Amino acid sequence: MSYVQSIERAREETIGREGVSAAALDAMLAKAEDALAVVRSWHADGTLPLLRLPEDTAEVTALGPVVARLQHADDIVFLGTGGSALGGQTVAQLADHAVPGVAPFREGARVHFMDNLDPLTFASFLEHLPLVTARFVAISKSGGTGETLMQTIAVLDALKRAGLESRIPELVFGLSEPAKPGKKNGLRTLLESYGVTMLDHHTGVGGRFSVLTNVGLLPAAALGLDALAIRAGAKEVMDTVLSGVPAAQVAPALGAALALALAEERGKTIAVVMAYADRLAMFTKWYVQLWAESLGKQGHGTTPVGALGPVDQHSQLQLYLDGPKDKFFTVITTKVAGKGPKLDAGLAALAGEPDFAGRTIGDLVAAQGRATADTLAKNGLPTRTIHVERLDERALGALLMHFMLETIIAAQILGIDAFDQPAVEEGKILAKKYLAESA
Ligand SMILES: O=P(O)(O)OC[C@H]1O[C@](O)(CO)[C@@H](O)[C@@H]1O
Image (cartoon, rainbow, N blue to C red):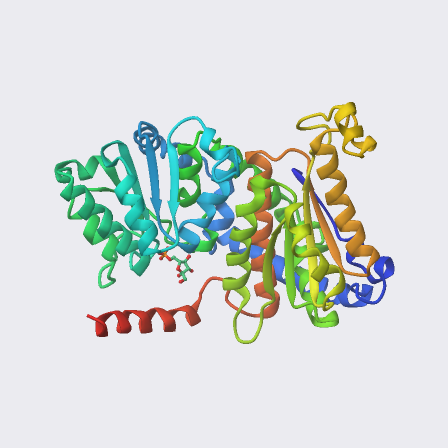
């Protein structure tokens, strides 16, 4: 496996009474066993296409021609929000996208994910962007999300005003569900009227579960990543699910059982995922949407929080260690010991840190990740660790699949639908009403 999960520091026997008791975990694992059986049946009968994606390579290869057209650009602009943006951004970070200090020096096209809607940002962006050498990909499963539609309309308008209307089919791509009789899809209708190439969003895969489809893998491939390796990593996790071993040996089932047992037995209603790698910062944001939108229903759900190490030690750790004991921690580390600049002995001595001499920055980060997990546990706070030896496409694919399965299994145990988000609609409808009224 590309990662190793340990829940030892979340157990009562190890950390004391804030940890999960063996009885509570076993009881939840029995429920996870039933949930796993359902997941296996969904794989067998194809009810949940997400579970079959890791086996499929043809769909990834088919992205080739679009990727080739994107890679000629100076700027690649992804329009879309929520599940139509977070997966792409997560994988893009492996190729240094949005990595502090490094991103501006990336080779190849500049990549922009315009996922939030801010009028000042978008106006300034369109003003500065060299339109003729840019390529745009508008992504929306439903094709009806206001933010994405507004951005797309603004881009088409900017292209027309720049005298590029005839080149719109060359410069713009769309990705949305196929047209369905009787179902409105504004994005598709709009873009098809300009002859834009439309890719199909997988109809059986929801937005926040779409990172392994073209939604996540098109950006991955456009940034030169190995999209097939992402799926291969996901397959590793699916293979353990399908192997028939008990839930306690299936990492996502164990993770789901642990999270729910800690919530039920110990009131751990906040789930903090703290990753010690810049290239997992977006991963924590992707996880937040996945866990929040999938499980926050009918009074259920725990509140997901993303944190980044070591930087957030200097903002959040005080609360985590000494605040309310309402949290379950997941600390994700990667093998960084020995990596990065090696520190000069003389300079280290001058700084009053002789122990830094000859050590690398990676040595310190590795020690910090370990120390945080140990300190949380020593303070009696339930902590799961996930260690990744090598953070590459395969490992990221495995982590993505792990957390999607963990979420699906948790929803199944709770008896809720992981794949809808009915409560979000209310505000969307009201916002459209207010917009119409303000005209
Ligand atoms: O891909 P779409 O349909 O534009 O939706 C974007 C996001 O909006 C939501 O529907 C919630 O508002 C998310 O579930 C989804 O990921």
